[in-house]
Image (tube, rainbow, N blue to C red):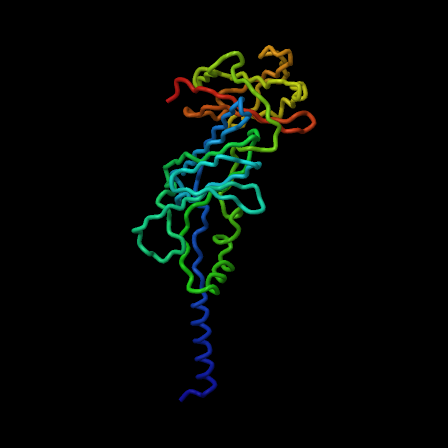
Length: 304
């Protein structure tokens, strides 16, 4: 017969083992197993002095999750926010971030024990989704985007279990901006808006991605914008953030208003243009640091 002390010790050890097993937490997969690319068109309405920003989100073949949210930093205010079918726009408190979340779910989907069911409009690998757009008076510049993939999170039996999950799995349930896949795209910034003219003197502004070596762009001077103060080395154009191929500034009055304009050239292959692009944007700084940006319409020709 076992001594009483040994029996009690065995019972206590067994109880501790059961408790430890009960508190073992199985962490969800972090929502960052996606490989995305963001296409953007920044169109400018000179009459209204209004920029329209339109985005297409593509989920790459190597992604392990469906994309369930797309968010980006913007300089407020923004207006006329549009969303793809089944996606809901939202704003983040205490920061200038605009986002969209896939919210449309199936009414007949199975109850599989996860806290938030997957949306039927999430962007699957090898798929792309357009329709994210808004308008702004602020000119284009480079901004951060944040994308998350869908990761099922099991329903927790009580608040204590939910807190234990959050404490045990910061890599999967922590701060949204720490978990998301991030990158740089184009959006409204505090930059000074300027007018640019792609292919000065021509309209429409046709760009041949195969035949042209460079694209001329004029930054138009005005009574409030002195182009002689532009830092040539700061200029970047298109999604490829192309640098100008010019080393010496060339000033011409391309629009006949009596005010000098700055004409620069960008290598076509470095602009990052795609067949469906309808605008070319440019950003830069003045010699004393003030940022500026503008956009002009383009037509891509002979593109397959």
